[in-house]
Amino acid sequence: MTEKKKRGLYMIGVVARLAGVHPQTLRMYERKKLISPSRSEGSTRLYSDEDIETLKYIQGLTRDYGINLAGVRMIMDLRRELKRMQRFIEEMEKHTKELEEEMKREIERVHRIYRREIIPVSRGQIMKR
Image (cartoon, rainbow, N blue to C red):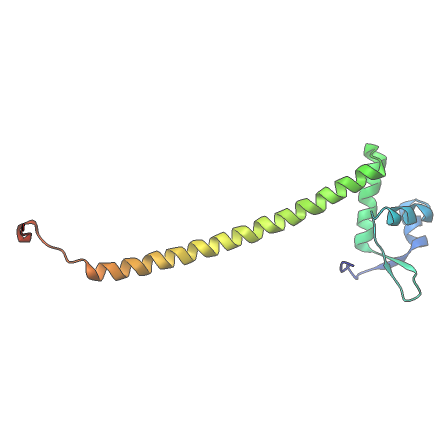
């Protein structure tokens, strides 16, 4: 289970009233894996502030845009994948910058080495064999 925000934990009845839905709707969302409340030791569903934000998002998609729950699930999956890919891109950008810095340091090191080996010679000092 993912770690939830711990600010608030609400029982299903409170969340249903706040959201203006029947508790059975919340249970259905859970069965369809749209929302995943944590559980108390007695197995009571406990909804976090993050769960309530997710619930608002689901309601916006279904009520405002007429999207069915299968569509909501697909949108939520795509959003999670997009966030995962954004984190991956950020990590790759960071890694690329680190490699660029390493390459710059190596180029500078090589330049310092070969500068000692190059001896300037004027044109008149070169002899042909």
